[in-house]
Image 1: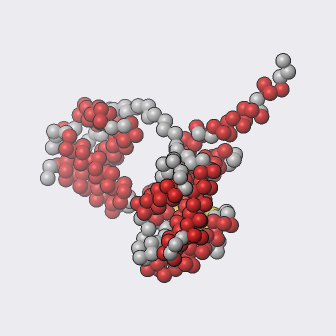
Image 2: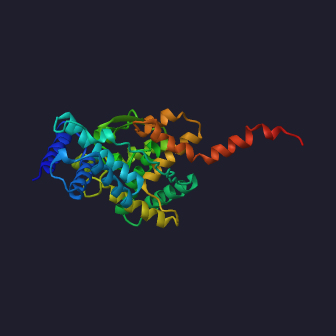
Image 3: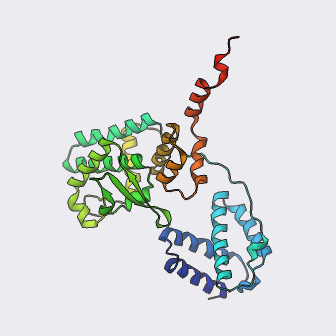
Length: 306
């Protein structure tokens, strides 16, 4: 292995064992850093100059969207910060580089509230009218999954990773392990949501005990995010919903709905598990209905008599 290869391997081991990064972050780092190694012609780390990095960044811009480039640069910066920390290099070449570019604002896609109502109605109908006990049990679990996604705004990965002890239906609290292993606790505020979760838990007790995760399939295995995506597509088709719905759209709708109801953005930030308020502020761009209401009822022009 080259010097750079060796040091990248050491860095990834450091990230896993010392920084305790999760598997998805480690995978992204490995992909980004391997790509960097494969695209430069220098074996010795000390030969990697600011010019080399700037040329590589230019190549990234030619091939990827700004958000992806931003992530790949962040992976590289973290690597060279590690080299500096471990005194593998005397000077960090990133210190001589200013990386600034405007990332286009991509507004979160939300689900109209009446569409969520129609979607949930399709699940509950399947639960009542399913042809087999198997179908009815699946619909019970599916209702619990969607109700919890919409009630808490949690990520699909967080939902599928819930352990049975993370869900306290007596206190109506859900303990969520988010990105970077950050914990947050969210309250279930709606009686119907709490009831369907209780019903699901009682019915699927054997499967939950078998896999130790709160959401399980009828074979006693942990529910996967792909299973949830397939389930969402199935009910959207059954309800004749043309909008393509993804699990993350329930999270966006949760945040936007609370913002439109005048909930302080810092509470929403905490509930979403965002480390920075800047990430949560994306939702301020999509509260068009609230903006219309304010400008219709509050703007002084309404009191003019001309």
